[in-house]
Image 1 (cartoon, rainbow, N blue to C red):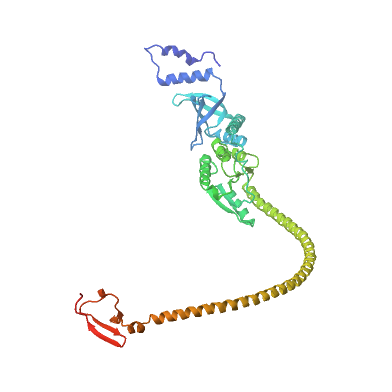
Image 2: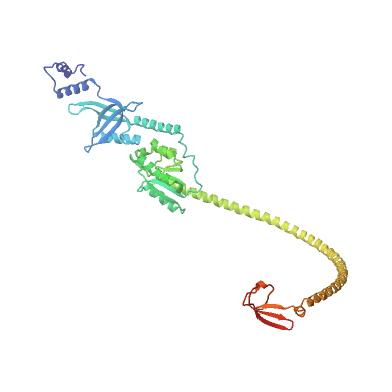
Length: 449
């Protein structure tokens, strides 16, 4: 490489006002300086801010660098991956990292610095080291895990108790996913009754996080209706799992009030959702098998309890039967003794009663004889007294009879059949009857004097 590029000498000419440079000449000088003073390639670490694949097969990216503390962009450059390199670089990167090249990834690239008179400064990307991105992704994952641990939520869902019998299941999945169909088919073929409701969500791409969180919110609104939540998706590329590795989604799953069972559909990869879920499974059918097995285990446990209860009941019945037989024998003996004792007692009491009754009868008979004598004496005395009194009353009645009074010269005045005792009872014009001993006379009152 020459120590002083030929075009570099023209810089002194640019400083003379009488001979100005054209823009093309200046850009050509910059291009020549960059080409002759800088190495052909550099390994550059940067974050992809934007990525676009044009219809002609070229890939255009915007590369940025952020400040580590403020996250503000401190550097930016355009990059190009020509179609002659892009398919091979993208495929190799995805095979190694499980991620497709996209915005938000930090990458280590081999770049050529170029400057074009018309398009300006840009970087031609000729190689990508996937190990750098893997390290960055792993670091991000560990940072999210540390944040979940610091928040104290990473084990919350795992600490929830699973119901002994799981029959009401809320499912988050794509309605058209084959994994969801296999899940439902396995439950239906099990012979057990499950109440399953699908809460549809996008299970791959950039919308996974907000779509699954929205489904979780809908389930939380009717949480009493469900016992567990199942998050499932079928198989796919590792890149499809990116949406399940975000802090916000993992935090929502970890703090969900119902146990969450995950079946994301990858044998070798564990997402952050798998990490914080109550129990994770490799496939949707594995989740279904677990639910069926839990019902079968519970049924077997109940059968065992039934057998133990039956055996215990038989033992208890046998023991109580023997005890009752012993009690019955003792009761019969005791009853016989009590019956004999009571019969003897009754005989004694009957004898005593006969003697006592004879004595009472004799005593009462004697008393009745005395009472009859006293009653007869009292009756005679009462009769004599009443006879004397009646004689006196007859005499008094005879002396007070109207006939006797009239014979003595008295008269009896009647008005309308009633005896007149006072003069004030009469008014002028009243008809009265005067009764004498030998007859009656009618008269009329003339005045009231």
